[in-house]
Image (cartoon, rainbow, N blue to C red; front, side, top):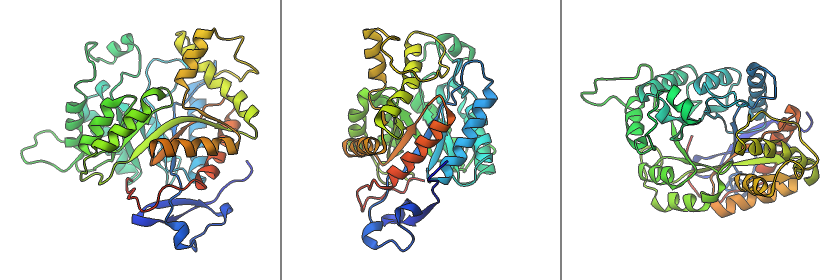
Length: 378
């Protein structure tokens, strides 16, 4: 892989860290004026996609290789999703994957994007992530969502009440935080390990529900614009307006997940983009979600109605040459005031995926966030 970056970190205002590749000519001798503008932090969300007929282990091995690669080029975190019973996605046992990827890397934060909390007993989640934190101290993130991550039959198999609508998410979250925080007077049930581990929690969502809850509790909020972009602007605005400082976070911290594919040219990137387009097409048809090779044109594959549905789901996608992707990321940050971008890149060929993530690392290093803003989320 060409243009491999050796990333270093320099301290910006308020103790925040800025990832600065040597190839951009910025080193620890960077001037004060340069250092006050923090480069855009970027992270990875991985659904561990599989190709038709291949074993899950091969897809998982690719994820470990990708995690090592993005660690080298300056990504902040590597998150793994939770999905159940979906042919084409090998991310059902999220904590197991997190441990495997953390074992294969050295410094990058590894976590869930996210654990679907209503699927699990809060005590079990606390024990799992408390154990991960004990093994990999200071490197584990716990992103939490309230969706089922599968269909109704899978929900039943997970022993989840089919009448649940997510309204119990705040109480489940409070119970989980009890197990991860300091022991309380009279607390009878404890997570061991887990108690007082204080694994950092981020709430995930695609509507204003989790945005409001994250704001009230003073927690970071990650919006899933990689599949539900419509409510992004409203949720981001609501989160910032209603944010209340907490022991976990003094200022709002917004992460936005978006599909991104960068390549040599706009045309090359658009062709690679037909792989995730085909996957979303298969999703709305109720078919398997295995990654298929790119095609020259999607027009023969979908109807007008299907095309509109897929384009709506992927409406936040940033696809093109380096210049096009930079313009898209800058617009996203300017429009939403995002503090961090979670990059979702799925291409059929692993080499194309690795190359795209490396390109985005170089691009993000040139995008500066507003100075004098406290961004101390881990």
